[in-house]
Length: 505
Ligand code: BES
Ligand code: MN
Ligand code: ZN
Image (cartoon, rainbow, N blue to C red; front, side, top):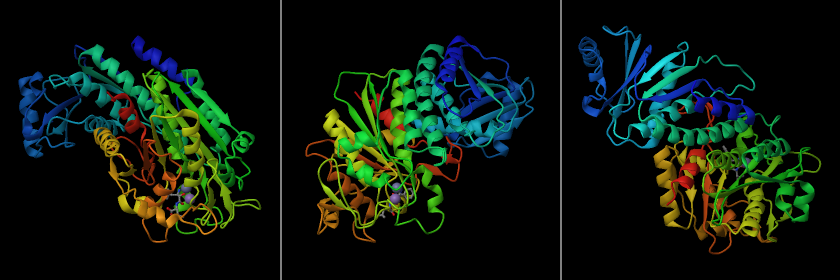
């Protein structure tokens, strides 16, 4: 292990980085080493890259295997050749790159794919022949990042056997190391978000979430926790109302990384640590069993702040997380109750299961009142309507700013956390009129629920305040693995927000 790796490991240990596995090591060197697995690449139409670095006899054998397998270099296609002739290695794996140039998310997915393929194998050395790829250092760092993202395992309730793999890239070591270090900061954010979202609601509740957030102080993040008394002082009737049915009271947590003197970007994340629905209980199917993940928005924004702090990024970013457990009890919120929000607006609660928008209303007010942000991005597992419209492939993005939609959609495309714009329009706001209060918390049944929820949030955004709403319902928890994540919590949004924050001109 080189010193850089050692110091990173030491840092991660002192931080208690996550309950996830750190199974892999990486080195970027100018010379290849003896390894039992060799990884090589082909572009579409079999334009050879690194194969000519092999002995002639091995090349001939490999060409035969590729022809027999109809391998043509399509993106994600793999060919495995065991016991190749004329070299020491046990196997050669050829990965198809498809059409060039690749987006970083595509490179990361390939790295993840390889890691999953190697997962069942014992500990061993892997030589990755990125040379002579264009921007090879960038490719190497992103490929490594993808393989680490895919090797995450959540070990709090179950142990996994995952033998470490040691990857060696023949690449410009300085450039690759710098970039890889930045990506490892993002990774530690993704793993934090996954860990928190995977943790059961029995173990993760508003106060334990707040304690987890406090740990970021070690990185220079300023963490503030508002308890029920503080929330009452600020007249946060919405957060208090949603949280009052639970024995474990609500909180508002603020985590601020001030890496520049610019006005801050405020990231506001929905933190419902469990959503039973309240008196409008989630009675159908298994949906209620997945509702520990209803704090994924809060985990994502906290994790993004961690990612920025760990790479000492020159950005001013503040995560604001309203946290509550939506439960039933003798003192829970009733359908028909009227709440007074911190902004002063009153809300008739037509449905206690539309609780996310309520706690976000108070948090959005707080963001504007305390931070005068240059932009607010809220991230929330907000509506089933969004899941029905876009499924798991895309998150919904809502904003009045075409520029912001374009920027975030681009960032999402680059990292592979894709966004699709849904309408934010005053027509949907009409549905939210109440005869006895300023607003009601649900639109018309069977109507465009994701858009009426977005319009509810907009009622708490000041005129001229730049704002983006991301509805990540359905994206945060997955029953199936993806190229860069095992089944379970995905950490959706951390890579997207990190990319947007750090790639800004
Ligand atoms: N947390 C849910 C939304 C959700 C659904 C997240 C599926 C992840 C997967 C949210 O609080 C909710 O219950 N929304 C209701 C609102 C309705 C009552 C207006 C919904 O979308 O059904
Ligand atoms: Mn709900
Ligand atoms: Zn919810």
